[in-house]
Image (cartoon, rainbow over all chains, first blue to last red; front, side, top):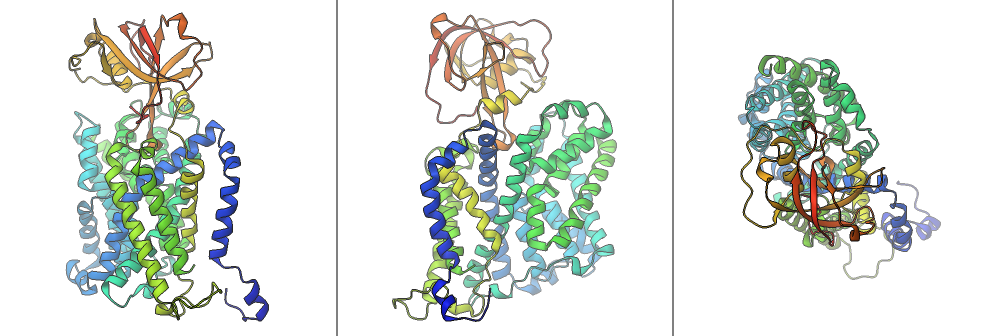
Length: 327
Length: 247
């Protein structure tokens, strides 16, 4: 809000700090009223679910932004040119496979992928990494193994389907993606005077940015969690096509952390294994909180194209892999 | 958004995280194993916020000079980037305020009544119950043993079960408890139906926490995922809400 500084404006200027201060006073005064508003059990449940999504995601987000800040501050740009094959078609699966190494959930991979792009990694490769890292890392595979006792093929199917979807999406971006859709993360103002200065500027910025969008996604997921009648689920489990689509859509709505989703998937026992695979492949790649975070970090033009395409590709690939490995 | 505001939001999120994980409030939202991670995250956020605040204070043109105008350039180190902070950061105040002002309680009767699946089918063989008379069991463990193993491991044992009262439309009540896989977003309920409730137990309002001692009795029909097993009540004690409200 830059304008002509006039003497009147100088006197009446209300900055963010004042808003924060006045807001705090109003809220403290209104607190008893606020609490009684939350007497409604549905609203209370939604509030609990919302806070729990944020609390559960927070440590992963912190790890993610520390990692992305470390990439920005301490890893020279030339490293990525040497680490990734120059041929971009080959770089995509290599970056996808690197996802095996980041033990985190999807909240961590959004800032890391943004940081990789800002450091000159080709967007297609960074996107393959973004999609594969939360789905195929060791913690997720182990928890899938534990959640599906006696069905180790589920682990293999999850690995194959998630990796294939990530690589396919990377290649799709190479072939059809337009640079103008992607708002490259603007980071020049985060260059500090020393690497440690850059580190703390980037970490703070990325946390506040990605965290804000995590809140939007968490609110949406909590509202849907409470508003959705549980009978719908039972109604669709009998139809093989609806079952796959239904669980894929549920993965988008529930926005569960990828390290726990296998246990949830295992509980949908009335659904086919293929439908549950779709839940496990879609969830870490695209859900309400991720859509919100991707729109925030990479721009809306990117998110409105990338999110639905990822959903379609992930559902198609899991159906194929399920038919191949799980039947 | 100025660096000061950014640092205040970081500090608030960090303090809120520490506040819930220092005591036992975090158990309303996530599993116990998350605690060290929450504590570390809280400390990191507080350190980042404090560091940013010190940066901003150092960058002030005249430290200590009385400066009543909040929007004077305080970003000296990075001229012209006073508003470089992400606007979305304001949204982080929503969970902070929810934690401090509303303090959402653990999931209870409302969630339990919406969950129609009571236990997941399993063909896992059940280990014998540990020693103890009565033996304290998780409600979910009792349900699985009763529904999917025909109560084989429960025969002849006195069990102690803890949960909350879930009122039924017919005036009776079930003993219920929520369980988490990861966080409250994926919680599910376990329920048992107490029979022969002592008449002096009186009317228990929904949500009351109780510990039942009793024995398993077979219910009719074949076990399904909706089956609610029975427990023949020998004793009932009203208790305080447990520290960890989930199974």
